[in-house]
Length: 179
Image 1 (cartoon, rainbow, N blue to C red):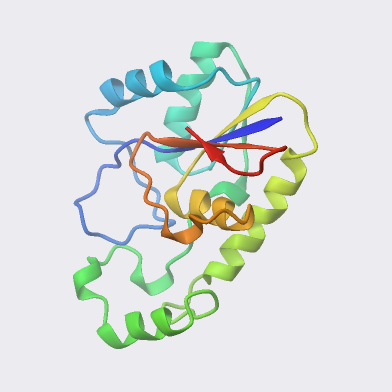
Image 2: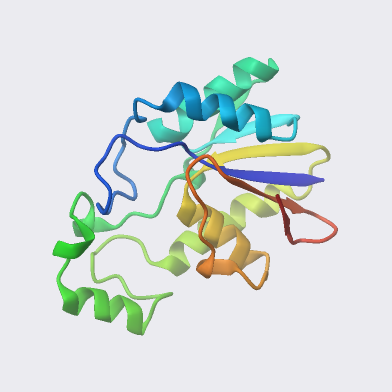
């Protein structure tokens, strides 16, 4: 059993903005990016997606290309950054960022979701999918992928950087990554 976690393509928003749960459309480069993703992905048996547009559009494109149904799962949405949503990272009060850094897993100075809350939600979804056979594709967000890697006890965890349209594959036997 394998799970491929794919980050959405480039969203239609300026660089440097905190956008977590904000529902953004895809950038004008979507068609080109989606084509590159399709060429690189291992063929899935099942496809799951975050409900947010930037993921759903890519998941629908892949599902159509493979003639597979798509399941949208709320647990795959990005972290809720509360009052930080839509703010440039440079404009978020330094004191709030410091509070978050001091207790990265549990602090919620923005009033949204904590990293621990995100991880718990992702852990619940992964527990379900690890019991299935085949290869599932999950189209989601960087935060969810990082939570999955941390949940899988890999050395990368939350320090992972994953670009738009990039993916990692978790295998049940290895519970690690390959891409």
